[in-house]
Length: 456
Image (cartoon, rainbow, N blue to C red; front, side, top):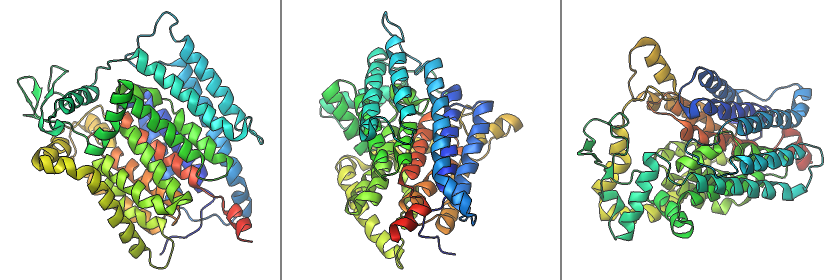
């Protein structure tokens, strides 16, 4: 059976449930395993799976309600998100000044009012509302970076050490890193020798280039992360002219742990930006699609799993030919931004990006079903299980997902939710990118009734 080339009315409502539920899931325990987070992860997984596989309902009334239901579900989700942001610490290493959290809470209140105004039939400020909300988010994010200048996490240390190496003309993929934790619990056996982690910068070269810009211009690479979050929201909000696109962008922008992701310095904000750019290109500027895809593949090594799903962006009679052409161009773009570092020391780059990940230990605190199973049974499932279950997820997506930008993003979100939920490691930053993908899918959605009116 060939996937349909039209949107499905239930797609956006179900993905709205998934995006909100997943945002709530990582709120508990900051993305580590928690009883409530496991329930919410299951809700998100089931909702995203149903969004991909369910056929279009035949009841016209359900189709008519889809647009209204999407706005309602996103609006209810936003209420909970702002409650979380106002009642819990946005990050873990904050040392605010005399004013405490007053400035932050004021910004959250302003954002909540603006977000609420956007749910009405005639949103206050119109098209300016989203840029203003993005500005509020940037101000709050800058506050987080200022009052949490040195988060105690190896990701931040990896970047600092890489920037030092670059300043000295040393290949950052051919160095070793300090073990800031004083134990080897978070690393594979034999990776720590005399207090040094026997690995260089463990993220792809393009990710390093992006973060270096923030380091050079702002003195802290996390300003690049903050800019990536802002740009991702703007791209989501302009995918389609519908109101739900802007609301979906706000749901992503103020997902409860957004400022925690920023503080920790995780680079998944770059993935969120490039997913949004890929979906936006498919909707608004198809010629830019290979560039956006190439940069997406280059910024995170596991993004190669999304390559087969690109066929969903081509509804024509020969989608594989167009897909292959696009993927070859994307591969060229990825090669341009990766090869300079690969040529310098291919073995070091492989060890940092692939070998290091393969040797990472099983984490009992991961927000995954494997960790839950190991805790319940005392038996550790095989680490390759996540790769085993992702193949059926990709196959199911190719069989059932609609061939539209929204269908592509929905399939991608479902596939990676399955992948992370059955992996040996899965934390807040992993699911942050999935939330961005879910919101991108909602933003790219066009209600079937609107499609019918446009074609008449």
